[in-house]
Image 1 (cartoon, rainbow, N blue to C red):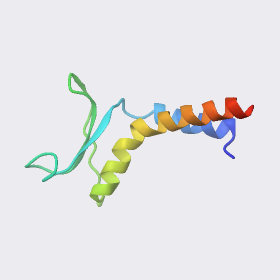
Image 2 (image 1 turned 90 degrees about the vertical axis):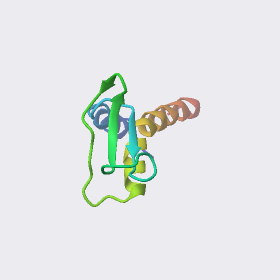
Image 3 (image 1 turned 30 degrees about the vertical axis):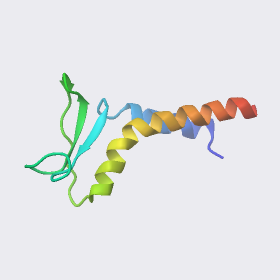
Image 4 (image 1 turned 30 degrees about the horizontal axis):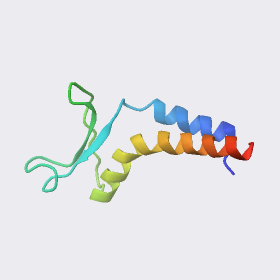
Length: 86
C-alpha cells in the first residue's frame, strides 16, 4: 500500500515540473516536419518544448500524458483511502 508520505512526494515531483498540459507531437503523426517533441503549456502560454534522446513514440506519449494522468491517479487514491478509512 502506498503511504501518505509517498503520495505527497509523488505529488510534489509532479507539481515541480514545467506547467502543463503536456502533449506529444510525433513527426508523421501530429506534424509533417521537424522532430518529435513534447509541447508544454497552453497555446497562449507555452513553455519550453521537451525533446528526448533515444525515446520511442510510446515513450513520448507516456511521458506527455503522465503530466495529466498522475494528478488524476493521486486524487483517485485519496478518494479510495477516504472511503476505506485510511
